[in-house]
Image 1 (cartoon, one colour):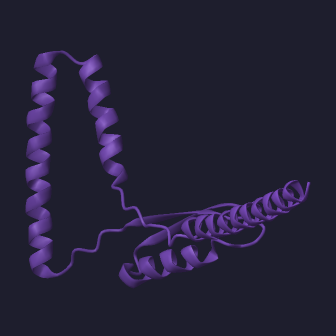
Image 2 (image 1 turned 180 degrees about the vertical axis):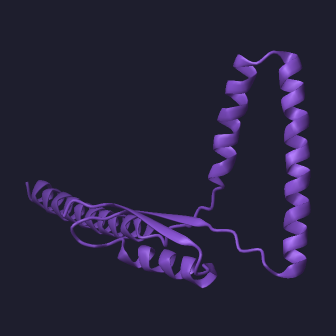
Length: 143
């Protein structure tokens, strides 16, 4: 009978130790997940003109005949060549001041946890923006 009592006590201590170890592992896992979720974010630079150009070309290929498309391509190449020539000339003169639009997306929350990423994005844009450039902030926030 004494053997069963000692065995029961040993079993209870073992289960208690295992439960404590599981709790510690769960706490460590939750802490590491929290650290992973607070990454520094990223800045993505996209040329929106390319998307518009692709849609335009798709529409033209659906509507125009092959002969018309060839003429259109030839005219487009000529326009591109003239544009490159003009940009090269402006670059030599130092007067290449194209207007740019910077679009910043901000998904906020009640805890304001994303403000550091917004601040860094604004700082990055302001470091290269000129007075002719514009900034658009798309703000999505519950509050």
